[in-house]
Amino acid sequence: MSLAWTASDGDRGQGASVGVSASARAPGSESRCESPRLNAVATRILVVGFGNPLAADDGAGPAVVARLLEMNPPAGVRCEDGGSDSLRLPTLWRGEREIWLVDAVARGTPPGSIHRLDHDGVMSVPQRHATVHHLSLPESLRWIAIAYPEMAHVRYRFWGIEITHVSLQPGLTPVVAAAVESVASEVLGELRSVPHLQ
Image (cartoon, rainbow, N blue to C red; front, side, top):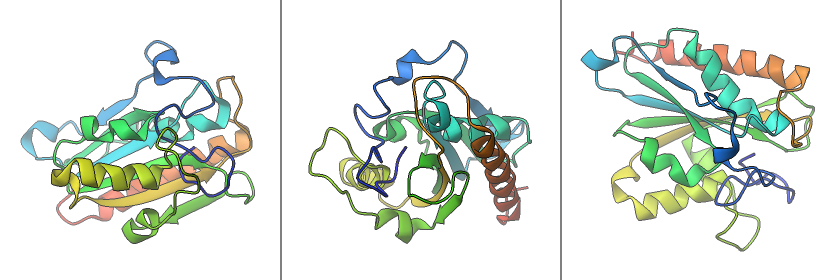
């Protein structure tokens, strides 16, 4: 989970994600989607899903990316499975003007609820605890803007999917799986509405 909506495990920084590292993923579970016409068009939007598919609903972000793989995103769009450490985002970035993020959240709303934040909204979510070892996603983005000045101009959008639970087992709960479908369709629709992404 990423946004520190509550005091409980709202982290997506170094050492986060219920003790299961990204390296513990099942073989072949990394997801990447690129438009078939990507080589002819510079990418303008990077879509990243954060989470761990081996930790139940924490895998919602990568599940959205995997679904987008099947949906033929427009040229100029690139999608990546970000794993469970948001501080690796600079290694995924190739100069895109916008980065759209998807992750699981625990905000206390009904499971499967979809939370949406624009750039200012996601960047204003506070870090709720004083440690650099477990950073919320917004705090990671603020650190990245300082450590990588070339990324300071990047604009973010965020979709958060409310979890049912996170545990050391693979697979999404049905209500979160349904929300994954909704978010994937919504993100694709938003991508298709961006001028010059066709």
